[in-house]
Length: 143
Image 1 (tube, rainbow, N blue to C red):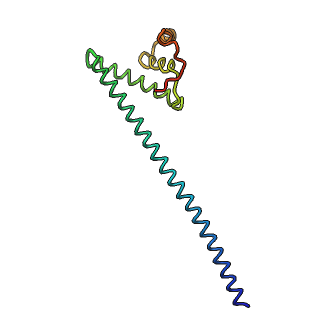
Image 2 (cartoon, rainbow, N blue to C red):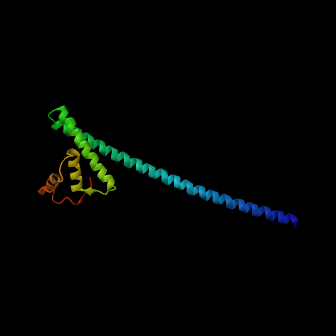
Image 3 (cartoon, helix red, strand yellow):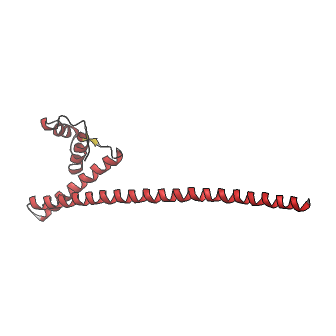
């Protein structure tokens, strides 16, 4: 009888070991799945960042090209490029603040003007952004 109980005891130990191994494998599987999901998310984020950086570089290139083409001198081009890049930075900050959902066009325009002319009065900004061509600017700009 003692031999039978030892065999039963050993079977129980093997079953317990199998349960522990099954639990470990399940946990490892979950961890492996989480790692795969994290790697996929990282890939998507890197691709999105790459896309946005390329867009910003294209915008910067266009700003430089237009500023150089229309400038009367190198100094004037440098000043215009600096002002436009500053306005671009302000616009980018607004988009970040709005979680990339779009900022109001009026807000974008007002802040772009402030970036170029920081001493502009509120009245001059109001006149600039209430001209007939800019009346309906409360809707979001999704640039």
